[in-house]
Image 1 (cartoon, rainbow, N blue to C red):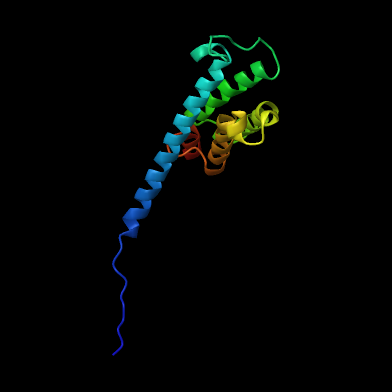
Image 2 (cartoon, one colour):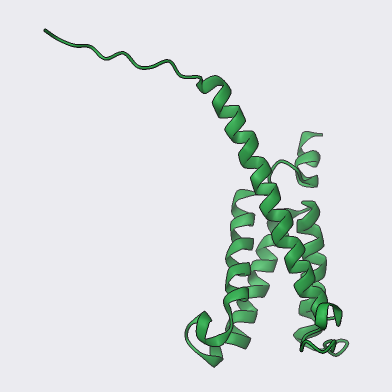
Amino acid sequence: MTQTITPAKTTSTTAAPRAAKAQGAIQSAVRIVVSFLFLCHGLQGFGFFGGVDGAGDSVELGSWPGWYGSVIEVVGAALVLVGLFTRPVAVLLSGVMAYAYFTVHAPEGLLPLQNMGELSTLYCWIFLLIAAIGPGTYALDTLRRRR
């Protein structure tokens, strides 16, 4: 006796769009949270949230790379936050964090746990991921594409 197995009925027609919609929303949520935190990080260079030293000090106006890095971080984070020019800006921010890691943290030790470079490393890779997967559903880039 031969037994045949018939596939179970699936609701792939409704599950796939739902999953895609959830994925786009989650991408947007991650982008918004990460860029907001990064915006706060950039504002520290201007003395906000305890400043660069925890005592409210800011980087010197026009100093390289601190002041320019803070400007790039704040403007870039604001653009990624609203989802405008997300991919190229996320690549730029990923590079900024790679630069910060290799110039500030890596000389202090080999591993991020040794050299206090965990944040730079995480931001670098998360922004690279955002550049690769896009801004998600809720972004100005998505609205611009629809027109």
